[in-house]
Amino acid sequence: MDAAASFSADYSEARDKFVAAAQTAGARLERITNPNRGPRGEALSTDVAWVGPSDAEAVLVMISGTHGVEGFCGSGAQVDWLARGEAQRLPGGVAVLLVHAVNPYGFAWLRRVTEENVDLNRNWIDFDAPPLPANPGYEALREAFGPAEWTEESRAATAKVIGAYLAEHGQKALAAAASSGQYGDPKGIYYGGAGPTWARRTQTAIYETYLGQASRIGVIDYHTGLGPWGFAEQIILESAGHPRYERAARWYGSALASVSDGNSASAELSGDGLAAAPELLSHADVTGIAMEYGTVSPARVLYALRADNWLHAHGDPTGPDAAAIKAQIRDAFYGDRPDWKGMVAGQSLLVTRQALAGLAAGL
Ligand SMILES: [Zn+2]
Image 1: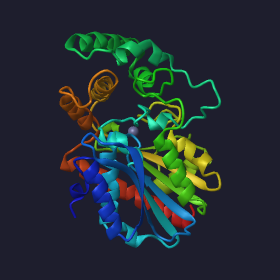
Image 2: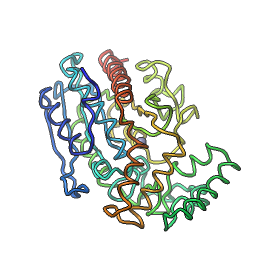
Image 3: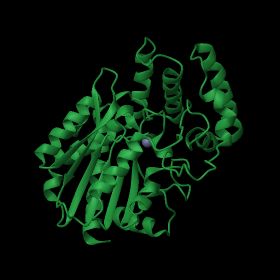
Image 4: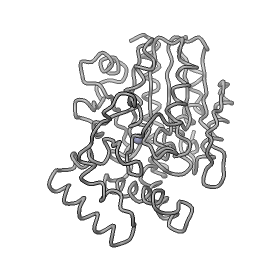
């Protein structure tokens, strides 16, 4: 079958393809409506599909669209998994929970953030236990990351400031300043929020509804925008030696990249959903990884995010500036070519089969 056919051109097409593929696979479906609309007035929802026995003690959870626009990737992987008939080949006693577009607003509007301008993977912190995490690097670059004007002059001036920071501190420090999360600038990039977002509350409710009976849970969360074109880094938060890391290594082998050990392309960050899952699902053994697929260079990704941030914070997301900026951010997080889609589907198929085998065997 043609893997590229499982991928979509926009959120609504992705949603429809997912629902159709889930129905064909005999899944139990639930639609959770988001109160917002898409750029063309389209309805938004997170859609949940369950395949396998309803009382399964072992469940694999596949999540798409944590970062909105990155949902093209995860949606394609989910639809491909369903369309290949994988749901009909589940090991005994194992179920799969597919969560489509957990941040549907960001997917539809081609944004990485939620309707609250929040990075969902910086939002899973305890807002009742201050102080919120500090990010001095972000504070130093705040004006440069998020200028009020987006003109040739402002782009050149801010590029100079960011370039000087890069020259002095290096790529890792720049990535941490930009992307490790910040809680002081609600209109800025990688903002973690001031409370749980709609997407966080929705994901929490899905976990409560579907996973109370499970004792072994695998989570695969699909992301894009870091690393070489089409290559998936299998990211785990824990260090080697941690029981969750060791379990993941039994399932997936030694290709894991650990954020804590510093061998992942991802910066260390606060409020990641994978970090929250073991606490939300404390009755179970939870093994979570992110599949992080590469697209374009870090410089292009950051540029696209800053432009999109300006458009929504200071410009008009439906005005004349929108088309070019939206094309940039779509390209930054979606490799809209057949080779990339094939790589996404193939590597996803590998890890889903590994996870299902690991869950079934109780590894
Ligand atoms: Zn992401």
